[in-house]
Image 1 (cartoon, helix red, strand yellow):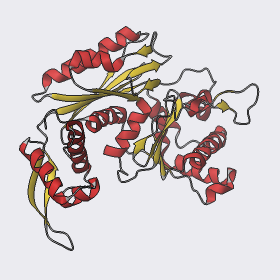
Image 2 (cartoon, one colour):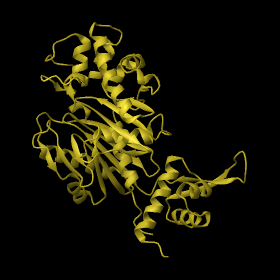
Image 3 (cartoon, rainbow, N blue to C red):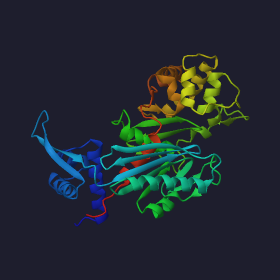
Length: 378
């Protein structure tokens, strides 16, 4: 039976993803990973070599069996862009076809900008980066703030940019750039960055914890991002706080966001201004142990303990300014969680500071573009 053109394109793209990830780098391991015969796999590999996407070189001598020729990704067929932004700043990353970073920058955004301003700034920085590259842009990934409909590429709402509601980001950017565009929430983009650029790339079940201007999580299970029926999976910052369901409850992000956590640890008023560079500010209070420290630890332990029992991830990666508090912060939360929920003695919470930097969202957005790439011709 003749294979559909769309199926063949998807299989070729999956081959590239397997080699790029390092999970399969020979014809034999590719055939095993993709569940097809070695002879058929050889045809696809030859095609990708002929089109300049793959390179085959040398012999990889394993402990047993025949030596295998090693496959690698060529860097020059084109590049991918990733952009992640909020109301304050924009992160932009470019990666070549092999997945190596070729450009990274952070740009501040003007205060009180509206949706039109945000889209204009987005296009300006992308156009400038495209003009500097000698190879074609193959795809763009966007990590957008707030709720995002990934299927339609519409940014549903974000309260910190005026008029940011039902913004058709995908269609707007595809019309301007003439390349495929994939849009995801910024925290889920960060979760993809852990998959491709993080320190535990072998993991297929993990959670990203993001106490930033708000509070949320992103979940990867069996290697796939979890989005939810209403694209709101991970919006735990909207949980009532305290968890006891007090009638006077507020939303959890108002207590556990990075700015509010800093205020609590520094012992300042709930409405007090916070430093613009919260990471450095957290470093300055890291060695201090204000009375509020134990309360903050208990609150995080209670929430992340619930997350652990609900989703059962191997690891939770802490992102954002609170990583300045270091592994002692994570260890204290893990220990406290076992005291709060006895079941966690067997299903242990593992919380670590991510090794990725501030550009994790943009890296993850570029990863989105890489994962959605399809060859034009087969």
